[in-house]
Image (cartoon, rainbow, N blue to C red; front, side, top):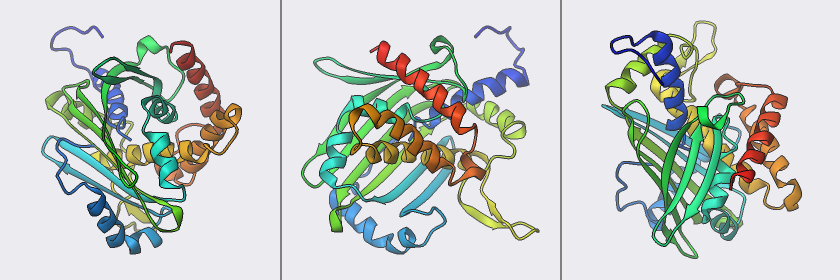
Length: 304
């Protein structure tokens, strides 16, 4: 992108901000992961969240949290899914399958997994919510690592050192353990740091086209009696956390479908799930989403 020094316009900041917020979601993670992230700790978390998993506004067994500190944003989802742990582990312990997950997100334009003797990398392009040439989407590379993969615990981590607008330290992490009745308990987290350019773009976005967007956390009640949800940066984090969780769930939900029909099942499943939360996640029509994603998937397959 070319611009003259000192001429940082609102339109430029808004455009770059849109790129940045979608990258933050690539992030359906963490600057540092404490030792308590283990199978035992995750089982303990599952027990402690029992009430929230049963009674919540999400229409599914799910708990969502977000946090914002100086220069860092983070989102967490804990969820119970009705898929056997062995199925979940086999499906998500594969970088190519993560590309099948990530392409479901409305802003992901492309994903390719490559492996050499020492590293596995996911090359991802993030862009608009409408069809877009691959060269116009922002590229980011995630290092893919399996931290643990046993009969009772799975931990996958993706990290990227740098992103646009002085953003850095992108982390995406998934933990999973088997639970009762043949189900699985998942913990999806992501975080990233941002600097001054990101902060300026944030203010531009939140003051203009992002001013009416909200997340999921309830903050009170409006004068008309309707619930009031968190906005700003935490609202952004929560929306993208949910989008990536729903992509994982849609991918898992299509595994029992015959392979030729799995893509259609995943796409329909992701969009149907997002429509449960129109206030937060509705962006385009089902037809527009399906047409765009089928084209992006074909492009992704042809460039592998």
